[in-house]
Image 1 (cartoon, rainbow, N blue to C red):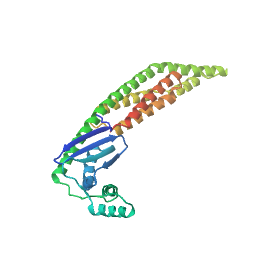
Image 2 (image 1 turned 135 degrees about the vertical axis):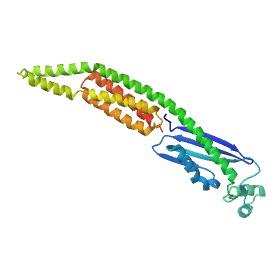
Image 3 (image 1 turned 180 degrees about the vertical axis):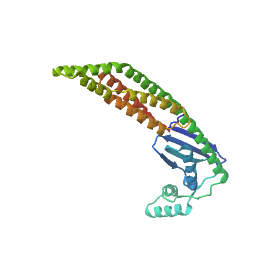
Image 4 (image 1 turned 120 degrees about the horizontal axis):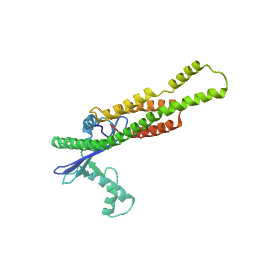
Length: 285
């Protein structure tokens, strides 16, 4: 069962004086690209939280956000009274103004507010870990749901490729007859005596050169393997990508050997379907 790299997970915890929100967003990426946003007071736990996320999500461009909203009387920010008084004194020496106006100006200046760093409470951190676990569970559900949509699309396109391969097989006898007729006409146009046995040998050589029996068999096997891998427990984007490369190789070989316009038109359709599969493959975990 495949998973998409696109996903979203969120969990909110309410503490006595804080509301803490954990968010995870995921998009496709070749490797793991993790970006974390959190208040500076929680930075000491960033590496530990990153490790938990990396072990769980493995691939994708991940945005991790930890947001803290104070809902009670507790606040980590306080007015820096001494700095504010100094600012007001300096403003008063420059221009006249009442105390309220000077205070408003002083509060806009750097260092007007000070934040006292406090150690993270162990119970609070345990709640954050639980919130992260829930958010990871949500993003996995999201990825699995998106994966099912991708699986249906892949199976439909593989079925289309199998149908096109059947059409190629049906017209192959006509193609070989057309190639044989073309070669015989070319020899007849030369208007020269030709050894019949030698001509037959050369004809067989060219027909074998344009034979696509092996390519058809291998392509059918690759398509079947892709479908089985898609439903297996160890299915992943990289493995499916390798199989799609092999599918493309056989389609290209059939196209180069076809030498027959109707079959080459089918090959173009097959290439178009395969390109759509490869585009969607970029989203598979």
